[in-house]
Length: 392
Ligand SMILES: Cc1ncc(COP(=O)(O)O)c(C=O)c1O
Image: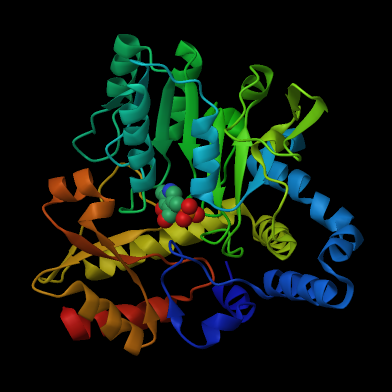
Protein backbone atom coordinates (compact mmCIF):
# COMPACT_ATOMS: atom_id res chain seq x y z
CA UNK A 1 0.00 0.00 0.00
CA UNK A 2 1.16 3.52 -0.79
CA UNK A 3 0.65 5.09 2.65
CA UNK A 4 2.02 8.43 1.44
CA UNK A 5 -0.69 8.79 -1.22
CA UNK A 6 -3.45 8.49 1.40
CA UNK A 7 -1.48 10.67 3.81
CA UNK A 8 -1.46 13.43 1.17
CA UNK A 9 -5.24 13.14 0.90
CA UNK A 10 -5.57 13.90 4.64
CA UNK A 11 -5.21 17.63 5.40
CA UNK A 12 -4.82 17.17 9.18
CA UNK A 13 -1.88 14.81 8.72
CA UNK A 14 0.28 17.70 7.53
CA UNK A 15 0.25 19.19 11.03
CA UNK A 16 0.82 16.29 13.44
CA UNK A 17 1.22 12.54 13.78
CA UNK A 18 -2.23 11.17 14.45
CA UNK A 19 -2.16 7.88 16.35
CA UNK A 20 -5.64 8.31 17.82
CA UNK A 21 -7.72 6.70 15.09
CA UNK A 22 -9.49 4.57 17.71
CA UNK A 23 -10.72 7.89 19.15
CA UNK A 24 -11.51 9.72 15.93
CA UNK A 25 -9.53 9.30 12.70
CA UNK A 26 -8.55 12.17 10.43
CA UNK A 27 -11.05 12.71 7.63
CA UNK A 28 -9.85 12.51 4.02
CA UNK A 29 -10.53 15.40 1.62
CA UNK A 30 -13.68 13.95 -0.07
CA UNK A 31 -15.41 13.57 3.31
CA UNK A 32 -14.62 17.15 4.28
CA UNK A 33 -15.74 18.44 0.87
CA UNK A 34 -19.06 16.53 0.97
CA UNK A 35 -19.95 18.13 4.30
CA UNK A 36 -18.76 21.63 3.41
CA UNK A 37 -20.74 21.53 0.15
CA UNK A 38 -23.91 20.56 1.97
CA UNK A 39 -23.53 23.25 4.64
CA UNK A 40 -23.11 25.76 1.83
CA UNK A 41 -26.33 24.51 0.21
CA UNK A 42 -28.17 24.86 3.54
CA UNK A 43 -26.80 28.36 3.93
CA UNK A 44 -27.94 29.41 0.49
CA UNK A 45 -31.26 27.55 0.28
CA UNK A 46 -32.52 26.54 3.73
CA UNK A 47 -32.14 23.23 5.58
CA UNK A 48 -35.21 21.41 4.25
CA UNK A 49 -34.68 22.75 0.73
CA UNK A 50 -31.02 21.64 0.69
CA UNK A 51 -32.02 18.14 1.84
CA UNK A 52 -34.58 17.95 -0.99
CA UNK A 53 -31.92 19.03 -3.51
CA UNK A 54 -29.52 16.32 -2.26
CA UNK A 55 -32.14 13.56 -1.85
CA UNK A 56 -30.49 11.13 -4.26
CA UNK A 57 -27.05 11.51 -2.70
CA UNK A 58 -28.55 11.19 0.81
CA UNK A 59 -30.46 8.03 -0.11
CA UNK A 60 -27.20 6.41 -1.22
CA UNK A 61 -26.51 5.97 2.51
CA UNK A 62 -28.42 2.67 2.54
CA UNK A 63 -26.94 0.84 -0.48
CA UNK A 64 -23.42 2.09 0.29
CA UNK A 65 -23.59 0.79 3.88
CA UNK A 66 -25.12 -2.43 2.60
CA UNK A 67 -22.04 -2.83 0.35
CA UNK A 68 -19.72 -2.30 3.31
CA UNK A 69 -21.46 -5.02 5.36
CA UNK A 70 -22.53 -7.44 2.60
CA UNK A 71 -26.12 -6.67 3.64
CA UNK A 72 -29.17 -5.21 1.92
CA UNK A 73 -30.36 -1.62 2.05
CA UNK A 74 -33.51 -2.41 4.04
CA UNK A 75 -31.33 -3.73 6.91
CA UNK A 76 -29.51 -0.41 7.49
CA UNK A 77 -30.36 2.49 9.82
CA UNK A 78 -28.62 5.85 10.32
CA UNK A 79 -27.95 6.84 13.95
CA UNK A 80 -26.02 9.49 15.87
CA UNK A 81 -23.33 7.19 17.32
CA UNK A 82 -22.44 3.60 18.13
CA UNK A 83 -23.99 3.95 21.57
CA UNK A 84 -27.16 5.34 20.03
CA UNK A 85 -27.30 2.28 17.74
CA UNK A 86 -26.62 -0.04 20.67
CA UNK A 87 -29.32 1.42 22.89
CA UNK A 88 -31.89 1.30 20.09
CA UNK A 89 -31.03 -2.36 19.51
CA UNK A 90 -31.19 -3.24 23.21
CA UNK A 91 -34.45 -1.36 23.74
CA UNK A 92 -36.12 -3.43 21.00
CA UNK A 93 -35.61 -6.73 22.84
CA UNK A 94 -38.52 -7.69 25.08
CA UNK A 95 -36.51 -8.65 28.16
CA UNK A 96 -38.29 -10.33 31.07
CA UNK A 97 -37.09 -11.14 34.57
CA UNK A 98 -34.43 -13.90 34.59
CA UNK A 99 -33.68 -13.56 30.85
CA UNK A 100 -29.93 -13.90 30.35
CA UNK A 101 -27.54 -11.63 28.45
CA UNK A 102 -24.32 -13.50 27.71
CA UNK A 103 -21.34 -11.24 27.07
CA UNK A 104 -17.57 -11.07 27.55
CA UNK A 105 -15.22 -9.46 30.05
CA UNK A 106 -14.03 -7.13 27.28
CA UNK A 107 -17.30 -5.64 26.12
CA UNK A 108 -17.44 -1.85 25.93
CA UNK A 109 -18.04 0.02 29.15
CA UNK A 110 -21.27 1.73 28.01
CA UNK A 111 -22.65 -1.65 26.91
CA UNK A 112 -21.85 -3.14 30.33
CA UNK A 113 -23.59 -0.20 32.03
CA UNK A 114 -26.68 -0.70 29.83
CA UNK A 115 -26.75 -4.43 30.73
CA UNK A 116 -26.55 -3.53 34.43
CA UNK A 117 -29.45 -1.11 34.00
CA UNK A 118 -31.49 -3.90 32.40
CA UNK A 119 -30.55 -6.08 35.34
CA UNK A 120 -31.72 -3.44 37.80
CA UNK A 121 -34.91 -2.50 35.96
CA UNK A 122 -36.13 -5.86 34.61
CA UNK A 123 -34.22 -8.49 36.60
CA UNK A 124 -32.20 -9.58 33.55
CA UNK A 125 -29.18 -11.75 34.44
CA UNK A 126 -25.74 -10.88 33.17
CA UNK A 127 -23.31 -13.73 32.44
CA UNK A 128 -19.75 -13.25 31.15
CA UNK A 129 -17.92 -15.97 29.24
CA UNK A 130 -14.40 -17.00 30.23
CA UNK A 131 -11.27 -16.00 28.36
CA UNK A 132 -8.63 -18.23 26.79
CA UNK A 133 -5.25 -18.21 28.61
CA UNK A 134 -3.72 -16.38 25.62
CA UNK A 135 -6.50 -13.73 25.75
CA UNK A 136 -9.83 -13.28 24.02
CA UNK A 137 -13.13 -14.96 24.78
CA UNK A 138 -13.18 -18.75 24.73
CA UNK A 139 -15.85 -19.98 22.25
CA UNK A 140 -16.08 -23.26 24.22
CA UNK A 141 -17.07 -21.26 27.31
CA UNK A 142 -19.64 -19.36 25.22
CA UNK A 143 -21.14 -22.64 24.01
CA UNK A 144 -21.23 -24.11 27.53
CA UNK A 145 -23.01 -21.02 28.85
CA UNK A 146 -25.47 -20.90 25.94
CA UNK A 147 -26.44 -24.52 26.70
CA UNK A 148 -26.76 -23.78 30.41
CA UNK A 149 -28.64 -20.46 30.28
CA UNK A 150 -30.36 -20.28 26.85
CA UNK A 151 -29.57 -16.55 26.69
CA UNK A 152 -32.03 -14.13 25.17
CA UNK A 153 -29.06 -12.18 23.80
CA UNK A 154 -25.37 -12.83 23.14
CA UNK A 155 -23.42 -9.55 22.92
CA UNK A 156 -19.77 -9.31 21.84
CA UNK A 157 -17.54 -6.31 21.13
CA UNK A 158 -15.48 -7.21 18.05
CA UNK A 159 -12.45 -5.05 18.96
CA UNK A 160 -12.47 -3.74 22.53
CA UNK A 161 -11.57 -0.11 23.10
CA UNK A 162 -8.96 -1.09 25.67
CA UNK A 163 -6.73 -3.63 23.92
CA UNK A 164 -5.36 -4.91 20.63
CA UNK A 165 -7.60 -7.95 20.80
CA UNK A 166 -9.85 -9.09 17.94
CA UNK A 167 -12.63 -11.30 19.33
CA UNK A 168 -13.69 -14.48 17.43
CA UNK A 169 -17.04 -12.99 16.41
CA UNK A 170 -17.64 -15.39 13.52
CA UNK A 171 -17.18 -18.52 15.70
CA UNK A 172 -19.60 -17.06 18.27
CA UNK A 173 -22.04 -16.17 15.48
CA UNK A 174 -22.09 -19.79 14.41
CA UNK A 175 -22.99 -20.80 17.97
CA UNK A 176 -25.77 -18.18 18.08
CA UNK A 177 -27.15 -19.51 14.84
CA UNK A 178 -26.94 -23.12 16.06
CA UNK A 179 -28.80 -22.34 19.30
CA UNK A 180 -31.12 -19.63 17.95
CA UNK A 181 -29.90 -16.76 20.21
CA UNK A 182 -30.16 -13.12 19.20
CA UNK A 183 -26.63 -11.85 18.51
CA UNK A 184 -25.43 -8.25 18.89
CA UNK A 185 -21.96 -7.31 17.61
CA UNK A 186 -20.37 -4.00 18.63
CA UNK A 187 -18.26 -3.24 15.56
CA UNK A 188 -17.40 0.31 16.62
CA UNK A 189 -13.62 -0.25 16.35
CA UNK A 190 -13.73 -2.80 13.54
CA UNK A 191 -15.90 -0.92 11.00
CA UNK A 192 -13.40 0.57 8.57
CA UNK A 193 -10.57 -1.46 10.08
CA UNK A 194 -11.59 -4.99 9.03
CA UNK A 195 -13.83 -6.40 6.30
CA UNK A 196 -17.29 -7.09 7.77
CA UNK A 197 -19.80 -9.58 6.41
CA UNK A 198 -23.01 -9.81 8.41
CA UNK A 199 -24.01 -13.13 6.87
CA UNK A 200 -20.70 -14.72 7.93
CA UNK A 201 -21.17 -13.17 11.39
CA UNK A 202 -24.76 -14.47 11.66
CA UNK A 203 -25.54 -11.34 13.68
CA UNK A 204 -28.94 -9.79 14.32
CA UNK A 205 -27.59 -6.36 15.21
CA UNK A 206 -24.29 -4.70 14.33
CA UNK A 207 -23.48 -1.26 15.72
CA UNK A 208 -20.77 1.24 14.76
CA UNK A 209 -19.78 4.84 14.44
CA UNK A 210 -18.27 6.69 11.46
CA UNK A 211 -15.65 8.83 13.17
CA UNK A 212 -13.21 6.03 14.03
CA UNK A 213 -11.58 3.73 11.47
CA UNK A 214 -14.15 4.68 8.82
CA UNK A 215 -12.72 8.23 8.89
CA UNK A 216 -16.16 9.85 8.76
CA UNK A 217 -17.56 12.75 10.79
CA UNK A 218 -18.31 12.87 14.51
CA UNK A 219 -21.98 12.58 15.47
CA UNK A 220 -22.87 9.86 12.96
CA UNK A 221 -23.34 6.12 13.36
CA UNK A 222 -25.16 3.17 11.86
CA UNK A 223 -27.05 0.06 12.84
CA UNK A 224 -27.54 -3.18 10.91
CA UNK A 225 -30.62 -5.23 11.86
CA UNK A 226 -31.30 -8.71 10.50
CA UNK A 227 -34.42 -9.87 8.66
CA UNK A 228 -35.18 -12.01 11.71
CA UNK A 229 -35.41 -8.87 13.86
CA UNK A 230 -37.61 -7.13 11.29
CA UNK A 231 -39.83 -10.18 10.77
CA UNK A 232 -40.30 -10.67 14.52
CA UNK A 233 -41.52 -7.06 14.72
CA UNK A 234 -38.85 -5.84 17.15
CA UNK A 235 -38.79 -2.06 17.37
CA UNK A 236 -36.98 0.35 19.70
CA UNK A 237 -38.47 2.49 22.41
CA UNK A 238 -39.50 5.08 21.12
CA UNK A 239 -40.67 5.46 17.53
CA UNK A 240 -41.43 8.73 15.76
CA UNK A 241 -43.26 9.92 12.63
CA UNK A 242 -40.38 8.63 10.46
CA UNK A 243 -39.93 5.19 12.04
CA UNK A 244 -43.69 4.56 12.25
CA UNK A 245 -47.00 5.79 10.85
CA UNK A 246 -50.19 6.72 12.76
CA UNK A 247 -52.99 5.44 10.54
CA UNK A 248 -55.75 5.50 13.17
CA UNK A 249 -56.17 7.41 16.42
CA UNK A 250 -55.33 4.36 18.57
CA UNK A 251 -52.88 2.49 16.36
CA UNK A 252 -49.36 2.94 14.99
CA UNK A 253 -47.41 0.84 12.48
CA UNK A 254 -43.62 0.53 12.62
CA UNK A 255 -41.78 0.95 9.33
CA UNK A 256 -41.19 -2.37 7.56
CA UNK A 257 -37.44 -1.75 7.19
CA UNK A 258 -34.57 -0.95 9.56
CA UNK A 259 -35.65 2.69 9.29
CA UNK A 260 -37.88 1.81 12.23
CA UNK A 261 -34.66 2.17 14.28
CA UNK A 262 -34.05 5.75 13.07
CA UNK A 263 -35.26 9.19 14.08
CA UNK A 264 -36.62 11.67 11.57
CA UNK A 265 -34.17 14.44 12.37
CA UNK A 266 -30.51 14.14 11.50
CA UNK A 267 -27.65 16.34 10.31
CA UNK A 268 -27.58 15.77 6.54
CA UNK A 269 -24.08 17.18 6.21
CA UNK A 270 -22.98 14.31 8.45
CA UNK A 271 -24.98 11.74 6.47
CA UNK A 272 -23.22 12.91 3.29
CA UNK A 273 -19.84 12.88 5.03
CA UNK A 274 -20.56 9.36 6.25
CA UNK A 275 -21.43 8.19 2.72
CA UNK A 276 -18.22 9.75 1.39
CA UNK A 277 -16.21 7.98 4.12
CA UNK A 278 -17.58 4.58 3.13
CA UNK A 279 -17.04 5.30 -0.57
CA UNK A 280 -13.45 6.18 0.30
CA UNK A 281 -12.88 3.06 2.43
CA UNK A 282 -14.35 0.80 -0.25
CA UNK A 283 -12.11 2.54 -2.79
CA UNK A 284 -9.00 1.76 -0.72
CA UNK A 285 -10.26 -1.79 -0.04
CA UNK A 286 -11.05 -3.29 3.35
CA UNK A 287 -8.60 -6.19 2.98
CA UNK A 288 -5.81 -3.74 2.14
CA UNK A 289 -6.79 -1.51 5.07
CA UNK A 290 -6.84 -4.46 7.50
CA UNK A 291 -3.40 -5.60 6.34
CA UNK A 292 -1.92 -2.11 6.62
CA UNK A 293 -3.42 -1.38 10.06
CA UNK A 294 -2.34 -4.73 11.50
CA UNK A 295 1.12 -4.29 9.96
CA UNK A 296 1.51 -0.83 11.52
CA UNK A 297 0.29 -2.02 14.94
CA UNK A 298 2.58 -5.08 14.90
CA UNK A 299 5.50 -2.79 13.99
CA UNK A 300 4.76 -0.51 16.95
CA UNK A 301 4.50 -3.47 19.37
CA UNK A 302 7.79 -4.84 18.11
CA UNK A 303 9.55 -1.47 18.47
CA UNK A 304 8.47 -1.25 22.13
CA UNK A 305 9.29 -4.88 22.90
CA UNK A 306 12.77 -4.24 24.36
CA UNK A 307 11.97 -1.24 26.53
CA UNK A 308 12.35 -1.74 30.30
CA UNK A 309 9.83 0.94 31.31
CA UNK A 310 7.17 0.37 28.66
CA UNK A 311 5.07 -2.75 28.65
CA UNK A 312 2.86 -3.77 25.72
CA UNK A 313 -0.41 -5.01 27.25
CA UNK A 314 -2.14 -6.50 24.21
CA UNK A 315 -3.12 -10.17 24.46
CA UNK A 316 -5.08 -12.39 22.09
CA UNK A 317 -4.85 -14.99 19.33
CA UNK A 318 -5.49 -12.28 16.74
CA UNK A 319 -4.43 -8.67 17.27
CA UNK A 320 -5.76 -5.56 15.52
CA UNK A 321 -4.92 -1.88 15.22
CA UNK A 322 -5.02 -0.80 18.87
CA UNK A 323 -1.71 -0.84 20.74
CA UNK A 324 -1.88 -0.43 24.52
CA UNK A 325 1.17 0.35 26.65
CA UNK A 326 1.76 0.73 30.33
CA UNK A 327 4.46 3.22 31.30
CA UNK A 328 5.62 2.45 34.81
CA UNK A 329 6.11 5.38 37.15
CA UNK A 330 4.51 7.93 34.81
CA UNK A 331 1.51 10.21 35.28
CA UNK A 332 -0.95 9.49 32.44
CA UNK A 333 -2.03 13.11 31.88
CA UNK A 334 1.63 14.20 31.66
CA UNK A 335 2.39 11.44 29.14
CA UNK A 336 -0.44 12.46 26.86
CA UNK A 337 0.28 16.17 27.17
CA UNK A 338 4.01 15.61 26.57
CA UNK A 339 3.25 13.75 23.36
CA UNK A 340 0.71 16.33 22.25
CA UNK A 341 3.35 19.03 22.69
CA UNK A 342 5.59 16.90 20.47
CA UNK A 343 2.76 16.82 17.85
CA UNK A 344 1.89 13.17 18.47
CA UNK A 345 -1.80 12.52 19.12
CA UNK A 346 -2.53 9.54 21.38
CA UNK A 347 -5.20 8.68 23.93
CA UNK A 348 -5.48 7.20 27.40
CA UNK A 349 -7.67 4.38 28.65
CA UNK A 350 -8.42 4.24 32.35
CA UNK A 351 -9.45 1.35 34.58
CA UNK A 352 -13.06 2.63 34.65
CA UNK A 353 -13.38 1.80 30.93
CA UNK A 354 -11.70 -1.58 31.16
CA UNK A 355 -12.49 -2.75 34.66
CA UNK A 356 -12.05 -6.50 34.31
CA UNK A 357 -9.29 -6.46 31.68
CA UNK A 358 -7.09 -3.95 33.51
CA UNK A 359 -7.66 -5.74 36.83
CA UNK A 360 -6.28 -8.92 35.22
CA UNK A 361 -3.37 -7.03 33.66
CA UNK A 362 -2.61 -5.30 36.96
CA UNK A 363 -2.70 -1.75 35.57
CA UNK A 364 -5.02 1.18 36.12
CA UNK A 365 -4.34 3.03 32.89
CA UNK A 366 -2.79 2.56 29.47
CA UNK A 367 -1.49 4.74 26.67
CA UNK A 368 -3.35 3.86 23.47
CA UNK A 369 -1.75 4.18 20.05
CA UNK A 370 -4.03 3.44 17.11
CA UNK A 371 -2.39 3.84 13.68
CA UNK A 372 -4.29 3.84 10.40
CA UNK A 373 -3.27 3.08 6.82
CA UNK A 374 -2.68 6.77 6.03
CA UNK A 375 0.05 6.93 8.68
CA UNK A 376 3.49 6.45 7.17
CA UNK A 377 6.23 4.25 8.65
CA UNK A 378 8.32 7.42 9.10
CA UNK A 379 5.55 8.82 11.30
CA UNK A 380 5.50 5.63 13.38
CA UNK A 381 9.28 5.80 13.82
CA UNK A 382 9.15 9.47 14.82
CA UNK A 383 6.41 8.78 17.38
CA UNK A 384 8.21 5.76 18.86
CA UNK A 385 11.52 7.65 19.07
CA UNK A 386 9.74 10.47 20.87
CA UNK A 387 8.00 8.12 23.33
CA UNK A 388 11.21 6.22 24.05
CA UNK A 389 13.19 9.44 24.48
CA UNK A 390 10.63 10.89 26.90
CA UNK A 391 9.53 7.82 28.85
CA UNK A 392 11.53 4.75 27.74
C1 LIG B 1 -15.72 -0.76 21.24
C2 LIG B 1 -16.52 0.49 21.33
N1 LIG B 1 -17.85 0.43 21.36
C3 LIG B 1 -18.62 1.53 21.43
C4 LIG B 1 -18.05 2.78 21.50
C5 LIG B 1 -18.95 3.98 21.63
O1 LIG B 1 -18.96 4.71 20.44
P1 LIG B 1 -19.76 6.11 20.37
O2 LIG B 1 -18.96 7.06 21.19
O3 LIG B 1 -19.79 6.44 18.91
O4 LIG B 1 -21.09 5.89 20.94
C6 LIG B 1 -16.66 2.91 21.50
C7 LIG B 1 -16.04 4.24 21.60
O5 LIG B 1 -14.87 4.39 21.87
C8 LIG B 1 -15.88 1.74 21.39
O6 LIG B 1 -14.54 1.80 21.39
